Image (cartoon, rainbow, N blue to C red):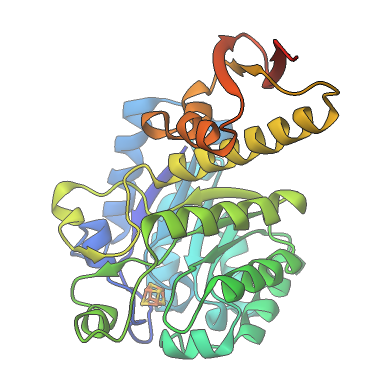
Amino acid sequence: MTIPIFVPHLGCPHRCVFCNQWETSSVRTPPDAGFVRTKILAHLGIRAPSIEHVEAAFFGGSFTAIDMDLQRDLLCAAYDFVREGALRGIRVSTRPDCIDGARLALLRDYGVRTVEIGAQSFDDRVLSEAGRGHCARDIARASAAVKGLGFGLVIQLMPGLPGGDRAEALRSAEEAAACGPNAVRIYPTVVLERTRLADLWREGRYAPLMLDEAVELTADMRELFAERGITVIRSGLHPLSPGEEASVLAGPYHPAFGFLVKARLKRRSMERAIEGALGTSRNAPGSLLLRIPRRGKEEYIGHRSENLDYLRRRFPEIRIAHAFADFDRMEIVIENST
Ligand code: SF4
């Protein structure tokens, strides 16, 4: 469980073209130490979870670029809970060009275990068009510094930025993986109200990814990270409230984006398994039965059964039936082969 504490745009030296943290967090006033204490207490009171899994997380700004005294105040308020044994640790999210030895030392002194780096892309042209103000080398350097001091490292990526494409997103994923993160977050770019990107979109100078395109690309990126043993802890923005959702002008926002991606991955695994089963079957295929694990069956079936519909279109020569079973893995039974 993560207790999110939003610090919208605190520390940011400027606004990146896609970013409007006020809209996506609904937080208008920057937090102080009292707010941090109240927020943590409220979450601990509601859920009373095991300490093993609870962290406070400062998101939505450039934490290590915040004035040092305020950083210390905010961290200190959360660290009191760590010392009391009510929290396992703290995580912060920040920019790669605002990480150095002194700032990391402060984080270490106040119980921070994980640093999340907003990388977005490893392509210098894309970073420049996004108004990031840093280059890919800064990300690699910051990642090495974070890991070198023993922090957990999470890298955040944004496919679909201006100037980017599928090849760029996959190259960025490769380079992110080469930094050796413990985990990755993937946020396909959406167009938010009151951003420079909204202006570009209105002027017809930026076109976001379509939803299905973003699902495919994010699934590709997840497969790439899975092959390297790196966990993807989020795909897509967290579900927005109706008020927050109104600020999304265009792009692949979906409240269940992560589910759509997992379902796409399951579809691919079923497609490959069917291809493999048919390839080893000596007889002409007649029909087959997909024995789908009951746990997680929704991801296998897909939104509105779209995965099963897809497989039936993909393999029109076979009758595909399905049944749920108490297995961990899907099984395919070829029946009525002639
Ligand atoms: S992307 Fe990060 S650095 Fe850029 S404006 Fe948003 S919070 Fe600040």
